[in-house]
Length: 254
Ligand SMILES: C[S@@+](CC[C@H](N)C(=O)[O-])C[C@H]1O[C@@H](n2cnc3c(N)ncnc32)[C@H](O)[C@@H]1O
Image 1 (spheres, rainbow, N blue to C red):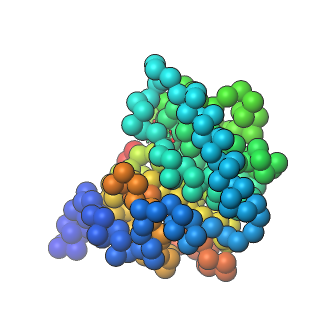
Image 2: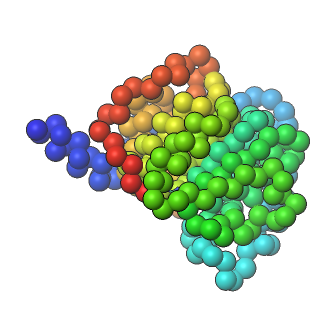
């Protein structure tokens, strides 16, 4: 009984930055240090990527205007955007999946990276029609934007993920409840290629990310930007595909 009650409370608590740091292989406020810990070696060179990213970031910011559907505070920050962009360029994924589009900051940067890669598509999930306003027409050909229904949302997400092929990069930036984060992480990890990366914003909204990392035996790398932690989990080559049983009896609420 005590274990069940403890488990239920656990799902409503939030880790502090000290706790995220304890669970991490590295936690830093420096995006370069975080990148050095997760970026696979190879081309293009980091200086070239930084130049490209500056260009894309400037173009993205020039599209931001009053009257967008979502408040500016929902937007991806520059440091996490840089990490996401560099990962998409170096991993050269055939498929990227993101959840949580809002005005489309992260979508724009991912699509820019895929455009420069000359391959790969982005599948994005949101729950609000009209999400992704910042993404220009010329980037939309490689973009599969899906709006999840209000009823049966978890099943719709799980079913859609089950039909996707291998995923090279996954970004969680949607609902941050324990149950929903856990649902996404499990669906994503089952499809993540060895060497692929699972990224998650706001990992201090619940213990879901830290618990998940522990359950798959991988220590995350964490960027802290504007006091909020952005976590990255790289899937080791040869790690088992099967996942451990749900540790806290998850139900999925968005
Ligand atoms: C923090 S914003 C995303 C910001 C976005 N990544 C960006 O860079 O601009 C969160 C988004 O998640 C969406 N959302 C909320 N619950 C969701 C769910 N269960 N599945 C998918 N998207 C969800 C919201 O409609 C909102 O667009």
